[in-house]
Length: 89
Image (spheres, helix red, strand yellow):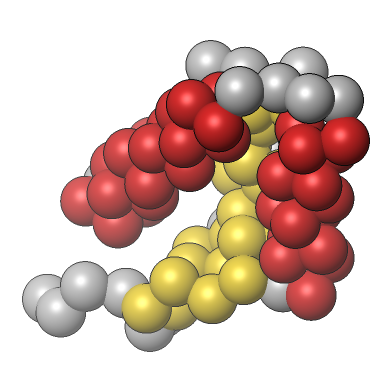
């Protein structure tokens, strides 16, 4: 089976940029943003390998993944994985 394509919703993209922008405004080190990016990349690879890696919600195809300092909300479709949103905790 071919790997599913990862698609980011508009909300998820906005939240991602807001996280990085917030880090810059707070004067955090560049390395913090790099670590956030690496964490997201690592978890997306895991989701592509095993789409059901997250915790299933009451909606059949929607999952939540606790990715260290982040929470990813995504759904698994036939040919796509849609990242709905992400939260920094």
